[in-house]
Amino acid sequence: MISQRIEQFGRPLAQVIRDDPLPRGTEVIIRVGHCGVCHSDIHLQDGHFDLGGGARVDLTRSVAPPRTPGHEIAGTVVAIGPDAQNVQIGQQRVVYPWIGCGECAICRGGQEQMCPSPAALGVNRDGGFATHVVVPHPRYLIDFAPLAEAQACVYACSGLTAYGALKKIRGLGAGDPLLIIGAGGVGLSGIRLARHLFGPPPWVAEPDRTRWPLVREAGAGEVIDPHADGALRSLQKTTLGGVAAAVDFVGSAASFSFGLGALRKGGTLVSVGLFGGAAPVSPAMLVLKAVTVIGSYVGSLSDMHELMALARSGALPPMPLNVRGLSHAQPALDDLRAGRVHGRTVLSA
Image (tube, rainbow, N blue to C red):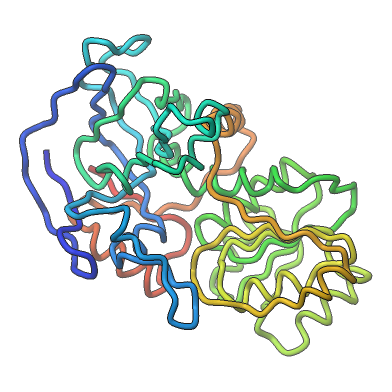
Protein backbone atom coordinates (compact mmCIF):
# COMPACT_ATOMS: atom_id res chain seq x y z
CA MET A 1 0.00 0.00 0.00
CA ILE A 2 1.02 3.58 -0.66
CA SER A 3 0.19 6.36 1.76
CA GLN A 4 0.81 10.07 2.12
CA ARG A 5 1.34 10.51 5.83
CA ILE A 6 2.43 12.90 8.55
CA GLU A 7 5.84 11.85 9.82
CA GLN A 8 6.28 14.97 11.95
CA PHE A 9 3.87 17.78 12.84
CA GLY A 10 4.48 20.94 10.85
CA ARG A 11 6.31 19.09 8.06
CA PRO A 12 5.16 18.13 4.53
CA LEU A 13 3.52 14.78 3.95
CA ALA A 14 5.82 11.89 3.10
CA GLN A 15 5.06 9.06 0.69
CA VAL A 16 5.42 5.70 2.39
CA ILE A 17 5.20 2.23 0.84
CA ARG A 18 4.28 -0.68 3.10
CA ASP A 19 2.81 -4.17 2.82
CA ASP A 20 -0.94 -4.26 2.24
CA PRO A 21 -2.76 -4.55 5.59
CA LEU A 22 -4.33 -7.85 6.62
CA PRO A 23 -7.68 -7.82 8.43
CA ARG A 24 -8.14 -9.25 11.91
CA GLY A 25 -11.35 -10.02 13.80
CA THR A 26 -14.17 -7.83 12.47
CA GLU A 27 -11.87 -5.61 10.40
CA VAL A 28 -12.51 -4.85 6.75
CA ILE A 29 -9.89 -3.60 4.28
CA ILE A 30 -11.06 -0.95 1.83
CA ARG A 31 -9.17 -0.27 -1.37
CA VAL A 32 -9.52 3.50 -1.37
CA GLY A 33 -10.90 4.93 -4.59
CA HIS A 34 -11.41 8.53 -3.47
CA CYS A 35 -10.75 10.54 -0.32
CA GLY A 36 -11.77 14.14 0.31
CA VAL A 37 -9.39 16.80 1.58
CA CYS A 38 -10.70 18.69 4.62
CA HIS A 39 -9.53 21.81 6.44
CA SER A 40 -9.16 19.72 9.60
CA ASP A 41 -6.46 17.74 7.76
CA ILE A 42 -4.47 20.98 7.82
CA HIS A 43 -4.94 21.31 11.59
CA LEU A 44 -3.80 17.71 11.99
CA GLN A 45 -0.68 18.40 9.94
CA ASP A 46 0.00 21.49 12.05
CA GLY A 47 -0.53 19.56 15.26
CA HIS A 48 -2.90 22.08 16.86
CA PHE A 49 -6.11 24.10 16.68
CA ASP A 50 -5.87 27.88 17.16
CA LEU A 51 -7.98 29.23 20.04
CA GLY A 52 -6.80 32.82 19.66
CA GLY A 53 -4.63 34.92 21.94
CA GLY A 54 -1.80 32.43 21.67
CA ALA A 55 -3.88 29.57 23.11
CA ARG A 56 -4.02 26.25 21.27
CA VAL A 57 -5.56 22.80 21.44
CA ASP A 58 -2.43 20.67 21.31
CA LEU A 59 -3.09 17.55 19.22
CA THR A 60 0.20 16.00 20.26
CA ARG A 61 -1.53 14.78 23.42
CA SER A 62 -3.94 12.56 21.49
CA VAL A 63 -2.33 12.00 18.08
CA ALA A 64 1.16 10.59 17.63
CA PRO A 65 2.82 10.60 14.20
CA PRO A 66 3.28 8.81 11.97
CA ARG A 67 -0.36 9.23 10.96
CA THR A 68 -2.11 9.01 7.60
CA PRO A 69 -4.79 11.75 7.39
CA GLY A 70 -7.98 11.67 5.36
CA HIS A 71 -11.45 10.90 6.73
CA GLU A 72 -13.74 11.30 3.69
CA ILE A 73 -13.20 7.79 2.36
CA ALA A 74 -14.97 5.72 -0.29
CA GLY A 75 -13.74 2.61 -2.03
CA THR A 76 -14.08 -1.13 -2.53
CA VAL A 77 -13.98 -4.00 -0.02
CA VAL A 78 -10.92 -6.16 -0.82
CA ALA A 79 -10.39 -8.20 2.36
CA ILE A 80 -12.56 -9.28 5.29
CA GLY A 81 -11.58 -10.42 8.79
CA PRO A 82 -12.73 -13.83 10.06
CA ASP A 83 -15.35 -12.31 12.37
CA ALA A 84 -16.76 -9.71 9.97
CA GLN A 85 -20.36 -10.32 8.90
CA ASN A 86 -22.82 -8.81 6.42
CA VAL A 87 -20.08 -7.61 4.06
CA GLN A 88 -18.72 -9.02 0.81
CA ILE A 89 -15.57 -8.54 -1.22
CA GLY A 90 -16.20 -6.25 -4.16
CA GLN A 91 -18.82 -4.07 -2.46
CA GLN A 92 -18.36 -0.34 -2.95
CA ARG A 93 -18.90 1.62 0.23
CA VAL A 94 -18.43 5.02 1.83
CA VAL A 95 -16.88 4.88 5.30
CA TYR A 96 -18.22 6.51 8.47
CA PRO A 97 -14.92 7.66 10.04
CA TRP A 98 -15.99 9.17 13.40
CA ILE A 99 -15.48 5.99 15.39
CA GLY A 100 -15.44 5.79 19.18
CA CYS A 101 -14.38 3.18 21.70
CA GLY A 102 -17.75 1.44 21.31
CA GLU A 103 -17.98 0.72 25.04
CA CYS A 104 -18.66 3.97 26.91
CA ALA A 105 -22.13 5.36 27.62
CA ILE A 106 -21.73 7.96 24.86
CA CYS A 107 -20.97 5.32 22.24
CA ARG A 108 -23.75 3.05 23.47
CA GLY A 109 -26.08 6.03 23.14
CA GLY A 110 -25.27 6.32 19.42
CA GLN A 111 -22.99 9.37 19.63
CA GLU A 112 -19.62 7.80 18.82
CA GLN A 113 -18.35 11.06 17.34
CA MET A 114 -18.36 12.49 20.90
CA CYS A 115 -16.45 9.59 22.48
CA PRO A 116 -13.76 10.72 24.98
CA SER A 117 -11.49 7.94 23.65
CA PRO A 118 -11.91 8.41 19.90
CA ALA A 119 -10.62 6.09 17.22
CA ALA A 120 -11.52 8.28 14.25
CA LEU A 121 -10.04 7.29 10.90
CA GLY A 122 -7.63 9.88 9.56
CA VAL A 123 -7.15 11.35 13.04
CA ASN A 124 -6.62 8.74 15.76
CA ARG A 125 -6.13 5.90 13.27
CA ASP A 126 -4.67 5.93 9.77
CA GLY A 127 -7.07 7.27 7.17
CA GLY A 128 -7.69 7.60 3.48
CA PHE A 129 -4.68 9.46 2.07
CA ALA A 130 -3.62 5.96 1.03
CA THR A 131 -4.44 3.12 -1.30
CA HIS A 132 -5.85 1.02 1.56
CA VAL A 133 -7.53 1.70 4.90
CA VAL A 134 -8.48 -0.60 7.78
CA VAL A 135 -12.08 -0.19 8.97
CA PRO A 136 -12.68 -1.85 12.37
CA HIS A 137 -16.21 -3.14 11.69
CA PRO A 138 -18.61 -3.52 8.73
CA ARG A 139 -21.24 -1.35 10.47
CA TYR A 140 -19.20 1.70 9.45
CA LEU A 141 -19.64 0.91 5.74
CA ILE A 142 -22.58 2.46 3.88
CA ASP A 143 -23.80 1.77 0.36
CA PHE A 144 -23.65 4.85 -1.88
CA ALA A 145 -25.08 3.58 -5.19
CA PRO A 146 -26.07 5.18 -7.54
CA LEU A 147 -23.82 8.10 -6.56
CA ALA A 148 -20.41 8.50 -8.13
CA GLU A 149 -17.68 7.43 -5.71
CA ALA A 150 -15.97 10.85 -5.77
CA GLN A 151 -19.26 12.48 -4.76
CA ALA A 152 -20.04 9.86 -2.12
CA CYS A 153 -16.84 10.30 -0.14
CA VAL A 154 -17.47 13.97 0.71
CA TYR A 155 -20.65 13.08 2.58
CA ALA A 156 -18.51 11.51 5.34
CA CYS A 157 -17.44 14.93 6.64
CA SER A 158 -18.46 18.02 4.68
CA GLY A 159 -21.94 16.63 4.09
CA LEU A 160 -22.30 15.05 7.52
CA THR A 161 -20.98 18.11 9.36
CA ALA A 162 -23.46 20.35 7.54
CA TYR A 163 -26.33 17.93 8.13
CA GLY A 164 -25.53 17.56 11.83
CA ALA A 165 -25.40 21.33 12.25
CA LEU A 166 -28.65 22.04 10.40
CA LYS A 167 -30.48 19.36 12.42
CA LYS A 168 -29.73 21.39 15.56
CA ILE A 169 -31.93 24.23 14.32
CA ARG A 170 -35.36 23.83 15.88
CA GLY A 171 -38.60 25.63 15.14
CA LEU A 172 -37.59 27.38 11.93
CA GLY A 173 -40.95 28.43 10.55
CA ALA A 174 -41.93 29.06 6.95
CA GLY A 175 -40.37 32.31 5.86
CA ASP A 176 -37.98 32.50 8.84
CA PRO A 177 -34.62 33.64 7.46
CA LEU A 178 -31.61 31.32 7.77
CA LEU A 179 -28.06 32.60 7.35
CA ILE A 180 -25.16 30.39 6.29
CA ILE A 181 -21.70 31.85 6.86
CA GLY A 182 -18.91 30.56 4.64
CA ALA A 183 -19.07 28.80 1.28
CA GLY A 184 -16.17 26.41 1.46
CA GLY A 185 -16.75 22.70 1.04
CA VAL A 186 -18.83 22.36 4.22
CA GLY A 187 -20.71 25.61 3.65
CA LEU A 188 -21.69 24.55 0.11
CA SER A 189 -22.98 21.29 1.57
CA GLY A 190 -25.00 23.32 4.05
CA ILE A 191 -26.57 25.44 1.33
CA ARG A 192 -27.56 22.36 -0.66
CA LEU A 193 -29.08 20.69 2.40
CA ALA A 194 -30.84 23.81 3.69
CA ARG A 195 -33.02 24.03 0.60
CA HIS A 196 -34.18 20.46 1.16
CA LEU A 197 -34.62 20.66 4.94
CA PHE A 198 -36.23 24.09 5.25
CA GLY A 199 -37.57 25.06 1.83
CA PRO A 200 -36.73 28.76 1.32
CA PRO A 201 -33.24 29.50 0.01
CA PRO A 202 -30.85 30.60 2.77
CA TRP A 203 -28.98 33.87 2.98
CA VAL A 204 -25.25 33.29 2.52
CA ALA A 205 -22.39 35.43 3.81
CA GLU A 206 -19.23 34.84 1.79
CA PRO A 207 -16.47 37.47 1.36
CA ASP A 208 -14.83 35.77 -1.64
CA ARG A 209 -16.93 36.95 -4.56
CA THR A 210 -15.30 34.47 -6.93
CA ARG A 211 -17.25 31.80 -5.02
CA TRP A 212 -20.60 33.48 -5.50
CA PRO A 213 -21.50 31.61 -8.73
CA LEU A 214 -21.02 28.28 -6.90
CA VAL A 215 -23.04 29.64 -3.98
CA ARG A 216 -25.97 30.47 -6.23
CA GLU A 217 -25.71 27.13 -8.06
CA ALA A 218 -25.93 25.37 -4.67
CA GLY A 219 -29.28 27.07 -4.02
CA ALA A 220 -28.59 30.28 -2.10
CA GLY A 221 -30.99 33.19 -2.02
CA GLU A 222 -29.35 36.50 -1.10
CA VAL A 223 -25.54 36.48 -1.11
CA ILE A 224 -23.68 39.15 0.85
CA ASP A 225 -20.10 40.12 1.63
CA PRO A 226 -19.89 40.20 5.45
CA HIS A 227 -16.79 42.42 5.25
CA ALA A 228 -18.55 45.15 3.28
CA ASP A 229 -19.36 48.38 5.09
CA GLY A 230 -22.81 48.25 6.67
CA ALA A 231 -23.37 44.58 5.74
CA LEU A 232 -24.62 43.56 9.18
CA ARG A 233 -26.92 46.55 9.62
CA SER A 234 -28.35 46.05 6.12
CA LEU A 235 -29.02 42.37 6.87
CA GLN A 236 -30.76 43.23 10.13
CA LYS A 237 -32.92 45.84 8.42
CA THR A 238 -33.89 43.62 5.48
CA THR A 239 -34.78 40.68 7.73
CA LEU A 240 -36.77 42.90 10.14
CA GLY A 241 -34.47 42.56 13.12
CA GLY A 242 -32.18 39.71 12.15
CA VAL A 243 -32.24 36.08 11.09
CA ALA A 244 -33.94 33.29 13.03
CA ALA A 245 -30.86 31.08 12.79
CA ALA A 246 -27.29 31.27 11.55
CA VAL A 247 -24.75 28.52 10.94
CA ASP A 248 -21.09 29.53 11.02
CA PHE A 249 -19.15 27.12 8.83
CA VAL A 250 -15.95 29.19 9.15
CA GLY A 251 -15.30 29.45 12.87
CA SER A 252 -13.13 32.55 12.86
CA ALA A 253 -13.48 35.44 15.28
CA ALA A 254 -15.02 37.60 12.55
CA SER A 255 -17.48 34.98 11.27
CA PHE A 256 -18.66 34.07 14.77
CA SER A 257 -19.20 37.73 15.68
CA PHE A 258 -21.07 38.36 12.43
CA GLY A 259 -23.34 35.37 13.02
CA LEU A 260 -24.08 36.35 16.60
CA GLY A 261 -24.81 39.93 15.59
CA ALA A 262 -27.10 38.83 12.77
CA LEU A 263 -29.52 37.01 15.09
CA ARG A 264 -32.93 38.41 15.94
CA LYS A 265 -34.33 38.03 19.44
CA GLY A 266 -34.67 34.36 20.30
CA GLY A 267 -32.39 33.34 17.41
CA THR A 268 -29.93 30.44 17.29
CA LEU A 269 -26.27 30.41 16.22
CA VAL A 270 -24.75 27.01 15.40
CA SER A 271 -20.95 27.18 15.46
CA VAL A 272 -19.26 24.58 13.27
CA GLY A 273 -16.04 25.84 11.69
CA LEU A 274 -12.58 25.43 13.20
CA PHE A 275 -10.66 28.20 11.45
CA GLY A 276 -9.52 29.57 14.82
CA GLY A 277 -9.27 32.72 16.87
CA ALA A 278 -11.30 34.19 19.72
CA ALA A 279 -14.31 36.49 19.73
CA PRO A 280 -15.66 38.64 22.59
CA VAL A 281 -19.14 37.75 23.84
CA SER A 282 -21.26 39.97 26.08
CA PRO A 283 -23.23 37.82 28.54
CA ALA A 284 -25.77 40.64 28.96
CA MET A 285 -26.57 40.65 25.23
CA LEU A 286 -27.13 36.89 25.27
CA VAL A 287 -29.74 37.47 27.95
CA LEU A 288 -31.35 40.58 26.47
CA LYS A 289 -31.70 38.96 23.04
CA ALA A 290 -32.42 35.48 24.50
CA VAL A 291 -30.24 33.88 21.82
CA THR A 292 -28.89 30.34 21.81
CA VAL A 293 -25.34 29.40 20.82
CA ILE A 294 -24.73 25.73 19.99
CA GLY A 295 -21.53 23.94 19.03
CA SER A 296 -21.80 21.16 16.48
CA TYR A 297 -19.22 18.46 15.77
CA VAL A 298 -19.69 16.29 12.65
CA GLY A 299 -22.59 13.83 13.11
CA SER A 300 -23.57 10.38 14.32
CA LEU A 301 -23.62 7.11 12.41
CA SER A 302 -27.42 7.37 12.40
CA ASP A 303 -27.12 10.87 10.89
CA MET A 304 -24.82 9.44 8.23
CA HIS A 305 -27.37 6.81 7.25
CA GLU A 306 -30.10 9.47 7.02
CA LEU A 307 -27.88 11.71 4.91
CA MET A 308 -26.83 8.95 2.52
CA ALA A 309 -30.45 7.92 2.01
CA LEU A 310 -31.22 11.52 1.10
CA ALA A 311 -28.24 11.77 -1.23
CA ARG A 312 -28.98 8.45 -2.94
CA SER A 313 -32.55 9.62 -3.62
CA GLY A 314 -31.17 12.29 -5.97
CA ALA A 315 -32.63 15.14 -3.92
CA LEU A 316 -29.31 17.00 -3.57
CA PRO A 317 -27.31 18.72 -6.32
CA PRO A 318 -23.74 17.42 -6.78
CA MET A 319 -20.83 19.04 -4.98
CA PRO A 320 -18.34 20.84 -7.26
CA LEU A 321 -15.15 18.78 -7.04
CA ASN A 322 -11.47 19.16 -7.84
CA VAL A 323 -10.09 15.65 -8.33
CA ARG A 324 -6.32 15.13 -7.98
CA GLY A 325 -4.06 12.12 -7.71
CA LEU A 326 -2.92 10.76 -4.35
CA SER A 327 0.63 11.95 -5.00
CA HIS A 328 -0.72 15.53 -5.03
CA ALA A 329 -1.96 15.34 -1.43
CA GLN A 330 0.48 17.95 -0.10
CA PRO A 331 -0.19 20.50 -2.92
CA ALA A 332 -3.91 19.94 -2.30
CA LEU A 333 -3.44 20.83 1.39
CA ASP A 334 -1.33 23.85 0.41
CA ASP A 335 -4.03 25.11 -1.96
CA LEU A 336 -6.72 24.65 0.69
CA ARG A 337 -4.62 26.46 3.28
CA ALA A 338 -4.13 29.38 0.87
CA GLY A 339 -7.83 29.64 0.03
CA ARG A 340 -7.39 28.60 -3.58
CA VAL A 341 -9.98 25.82 -3.51
CA HIS A 342 -13.55 26.35 -4.68
CA GLY A 343 -15.76 23.40 -3.82
CA ARG A 344 -14.12 20.26 -2.44
CA THR A 345 -10.80 18.66 -3.39
CA VAL A 346 -10.86 14.88 -3.66
CA LEU A 347 -7.81 12.64 -4.00
CA SER A 348 -8.03 9.70 -6.39
CA ALA A 349 -6.03 6.71 -5.21
